[in-house]
Image (cartoon, rainbow, N blue to C red):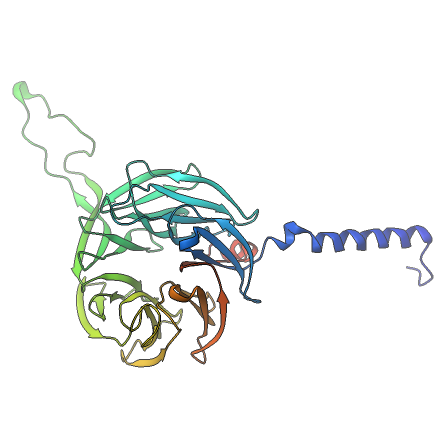
Length: 380
């Protein structure tokens, strides 16, 4: 290798490559693919705000369909799915789809006879959802955008949903029934074969061989409290904590026994969302506080082991959606009454910033870095 001067031709090539690199770095397509990104549903504006979590600035807005309530990002970070709610007796029967890379709305998924979609969860490469009008949950294959499975809960206003990584256990909150449902896939023995028919002919076979085994789903609905709405499962999978909005209480359910083991009061009024921190040591509950605009805490932090209050925060207005950042450093809380998202530092438990957004923010999601997600295998 020579240490002499570069030839004019080489100088030109280096300059050309540098110019192309600058264009690629500053191109709109790169600027429009933030990774990661905070996704905020501006419910009253029927829009989705895409926020850079480092600068806390909105970098794009995309139509979210009618009455958007909850949102989830696909594991590869390319798409977002948004439930179009409309109330528990709504005629709305769609889930909106947004391309997060191109930042544009795609054709919505039509749910047919299923109405009032609300809770959403991605698991096993499939999209799970609740439908309040039908008192049911369902599953969508994103590849075909079709509903491939539906199961009734028998509960009024089946609202939020969590799906185990093993896919054989699902939990839902049921607002008007005041219950938490644990839905398990179990093996059931088929009945013994009936006696042979006339002439010694064997009975007809309608599927499972007589005396064999089959898979089925068992629904156990556990009383929680009035207005059971926001809930979460502890990271170790042993407990469900449910916020009872109409009672201003929290109920703890033991997953193994499927029984409520304790209910206690909390200082936040009308608590409607509840989330564990990733380490399982604390629980965050948001609510309306003393009213839609002021008075009382809008967010409380509880110690999981002792169930004691750690911190109360007044965010300036009635609050709803909570999202804990995957690394556990921050929580984002949608302050619906003040059209903002509060950023809470989970180390200091202080408000570290605010994001002004559109009207009525509610559902929140986090778009992970698609490259990192490929390295980990999955991420939500």
